[in-house]
Every structure is written in structure tokens, then in C-alpha cells.
Image (cartoon, rainbow, N blue to C red):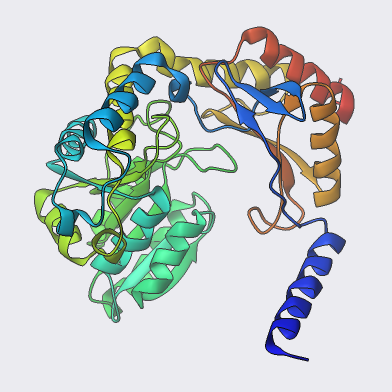
Length: 377
């Protein structure tokens, strides 16, 4: 058997195992439109699977900003910002992000994943300690492991467990980072940021909070020294960012490998995000709507009151979550099943994401269909 044949055999065996466990992923052609619309196989669906929480990816003002940037500056950035030069649209976006987060400076990365891949290794290495909430996003874990630091998890949103680890491990390490999310992407619950920051500061640990799913929707409360997030959710564009002190941002510019060694964000993405951030700050009613709709949904299904725009409907087995998702799609709703390893074994679920673009009638109809299909009525 040649090298290519053995490679294909390896891939086929892995795929068969994923099929057996109902864990194989497939790309499905899907069109997105305004008002939370999605199209599949010629059918119009209402999407509850999109992270466009404020509906800004289709806002005419955001689209116009992106179009103007393409016309003025071209489609791509041409290379790393350190090589081709810093673009004025990125400067403006970083200044606005820093002001929004109450920080001295900001740095835009190619994506939220790239931001987390670069931030932690630029601040921690051998002899340091990184503590993560056990449900932190995969990119936070990847950045922590790339750093070469000692890495450990604390129980989800358990400040006492974080304190226990700090008492036991902090003194033996030079520096310490604490990583968490403000809103957890699969459960929709919020971290107790005030308590986490207090415990971390008491042990001279630096806190990095991922605000990807909180920006503009559920970002209240105290700020962490390191505030990162994405431009691809509430801001409807693409890219990632870190807001921090000027010294930290300047260090990232030289030492965050996922910034230094990658192409800069296209001008259109930066301009779209800048326009969206301006709308986010000017329209508080838009920002309040996703959480209000999420709470409308949880009230109708008797679920715990939503803390964010994300509501999990736990199912259990992966194949059962897939079946429920298919049944909802047949009735006009796109609600994708989330399965391991994204979530722990036995906790496959529907992840229902609410947007300012949703209509109350669609939220009520989805709740009614889930109730009927799951026997919650």
C-alpha cells in the first residue's frame, strides 16, 4: 500500500468511526439573508444558528461602509501590517474599540481564534501558569498549550476552585494568567467576572476575558486587564481584537506570532466593523433585543431564564440532537445540533441563538415546535 493509499485508508476509518458515533460534520450549502433568513435546497428557513446577534451583517450602513472601503482601498490588505504598513481604517477601528472597552489601546487580529492563539503565548511561557475555566473556547486552550506554561482547569464558573488552584500553584510560578469567557458560547451563561477578577488580583494573576458572545448584548460588569473578542458576531464582520494597556498592545505588536506572521485584516472587514460598532453604541434598544427575545423563549419552554443571546436546549445523545434539528428544519427552522467534542459527552444540544433581527412570532413558533417535539407541553 502506497503512502497515498494508507492516508486515504486512515481518513476513511476515522470517518467511519465518526459516522458510527453520529459525530461526523458536513458542510451544507446555505444562503444567509436579512431578517434572520436562511436558504437551503430552495427552501426559506428562519435561522436560530447564527451569531449575528444584532443583525448588523445585513444592515445597509454596514454594507455601504464595506463597499466604500473596497472601492477606495481594494479587496485585500496585501500582507502583514508590519510589512505593508498600517492601514488608517484599522487605526480608526482600534481607537474606537479601545474607547468602547475603556482601555488605552487595541490591536486587531485576523480572527478571534488567531487572537487567542497569539495573546497567551506572548505573555506566558515556561515557568508560568495558565488557569482556564474548563468550558473555555478551544482557541483559548490552544493558545495556553502553545505557550509552554503549566496549564490547569478550574471548574466552570467556580471561583472557589480557582482560588484553590491559585493558593496551591501560584507561588511556584513566575507569572499567572486566568482565562475565561464573559458569555460562554455553548451554555449562554455569564462568568462571575467581579469575583474572578478579585481572586486573580489577590494572587497577582492577569485575567484575560473572551467577550466574543457578550459584546453589545451582555458585556456589563467590570473590565478585565485583557479584553479580547471578535468582530464577526455582534459587529457582523470578521476579525478579532485585544483591548488592553498601551504597553501590552505594543508588546503584542512585536511578540504575538498570530499577528506578526499573518496577513492583515482586509479594509472592507475593518470598515464594516467600525460602522457596526458605531451603530451598536448609538442604538441601545437594538442591543437589548436579543436578550429580551431569549428570555421570551426560555419563559415559554420553562427553561432557566436566559443570561445572554444563547440558549441551550439539552438533548443528550448526539443522534437525538441531530434528529430534533432535522425535524425543526422540516418545519422551517434552522437550529443546528451541537455535539461532542464541542460539548461534553452526553450533553448534545440545540444551541439557539437570538438576534435583534428575529420577529417575536418566529421566536414563539420555534418554542411551540420544540415543546411539541420534545414533550415539554
